[in-house]
Structure formats: structure tokens, C-alpha cells
Amino acid sequence: MAVAFGDQAIAIHHIGSTCIPDVPAKPIIDILIEVHDIETVDHLNEQMRSLGYEPRGELGIAGRRYFRKRNDGEHTRHVHVFQTGHAEVERHLSFRDFLIAHPEEAQAYGRLKGMLASQFAEDRGRYTEAKSGFIEEMVRRARAWKASTNALATGDPQGPP
Image (cartoon, rainbow, N blue to C red; front, side, top):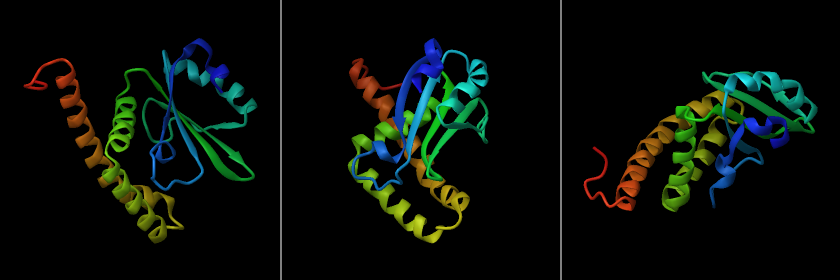
């Protein structure tokens, strides 16, 4: 897949529940790719199709290009492509890093996902919507944690302004 993006790819990140230890996850790998210019990604749709990925455009997030791959009718990969510097890159990576560094929060997320998966087994949209409040709270906390961690690393005991 990285071959399709060539020198446009700046970084490739594993995101989603499968990268967080001890969090139950569907067998779907979520990948986030940062590129220099998001507009060039639109010209890569045929290359991605040749690799088995279905281009889905922005799919509800402005500035994203989304691809999914299926094996035997089941989704196995989701690829989220953003231009470097897009706010969603920081959001996804902060959420991931916070849960990896805070196993108790990761376990709470896993429990919530399990409960909601049972409750909304036939409605993926409601499942996603129902966990959004928890995710947004974790992102808020992740940003504060990251800011305080960066402040400590730079020797600024006051933290960010």
C-alpha cells in the first residue's frame, strides 16, 4: 500500500483499537497515512483499487480520503489519509497514545465498546455515535496529558500558556 503513495507519504500510523493492548477489537486494521498534498490522493484511486482497496472519498470528514479493503466480504483494513497538519491526525494519535499510556482508561474503553456492540449489534452508526462522548473526553484528556508531558520534557513547570 505504501508503494501507491510513493513520495507523497510522510508517515504511516497504526491507529484504532487493534493497536491498544488489552482492548477488544474487531479484526480490522486502521491505518492513518499522512501525505504532503491531499489533492494528489484523488489521483491514486486506481492504484488503490488494484491493491484491493475501495476509495470512499472524504466519507464525512472534510480533508480526509478514506479507503477500505474487504476479504471474503468482511472489512479487514480501513485507511484514513490526511494532509500532514490536519487536526484529525493529532486527534487520532493523541487518543491512541493516551490509551496506550493509561491502561485503566483503555480497559474502560474496551468495556464500553463491548456493551455498545451488544446493544447496537445491527446498527453501526448508533454504535459509533454512542461511544463518541467517551472518545471526545479521552481526546480532551489526551491533549492535556500531552501538553503537560511536553512541558515537563522542555523543563517548563508552568506547562503551556
